[in-house]
Length: 391
Image 1 (cartoon, rainbow, N blue to C red):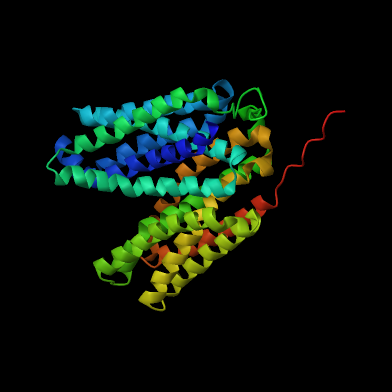
Image 2 (cartoon, rainbow, N blue to C red):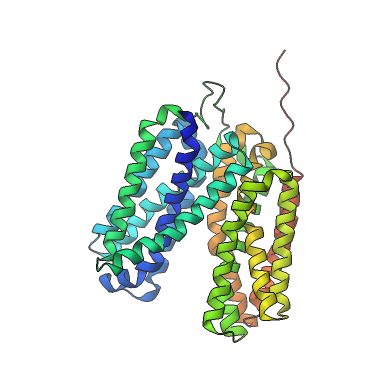
């Protein structure tokens, strides 16, 4: 029956993507319902990110105290409660407060599942799991669009997804004894002992991993967030063409993960990471060159496809870079750093574009991709020697 665990993990990753997709479509209706300004979305995103970073950073400690299945069950219940709370909120401050609840649940699910996959499933499975997140992020808008097309209020979309989260929490509760103690005292061959958070933070390789994930997520988010603006405001591309090219990035990112999950075993993980990072540099360089609209579209597509496998592959190498005792903590730290990078580096790109002009977007994406290549190379050269067995 434990063979069902990877499938449950895939469903959990789909569930992680669903709320992200819901919000984009629902926001105009939410804003109108509560009578708030357009930029009020920033407050909701900030508090949910705060909750996400808090729980993912602390996931190693949580996994030391609880079975992985129990962590997933409680986190899905928390996320479901947050989503159902959205559907029943009657005041904007309550909606914002519930964002913290949603972030706490999502961060714990993300870090715990990445830790489990890194220790027990391997790089190909990690790519498939992250592709499942893309499926969820793409399905969320379809659910909300269908709800509104049927004449229902935006709250119905959150009820549907919140109910699915609670059903997943029940599934994790029923299968809790199947999951390993991925961060707790070793109770069997499938379990892994975990160091304390302070001990992991004293390992220099842990900080290198934190910085690498911060930069990676910033590169991905910067390309995804600013491509449309670069094309429409900087290069006078028609909005329809610019939207199509921007969409290519996210579609090719998911395709890159599917490709790595399907055929990734043909290359060693370090080689695959180096190929992927080289693809990001090539893609951003093509966008920067602005040779033609076709070359820009190719550059965005190449960069997206290359970005796809980097995150899951770096997660997969965490046990070899830091040792299994530090893996649970390190994965949590890295996931938290990625969440921060998603906000900070795109913000820096926006500031650069305001200061030096729209074309600074392309230049900074190239700069960040080169920095990412250097940090990935340093991370891949960091390994922890295997422990010597006791006599």
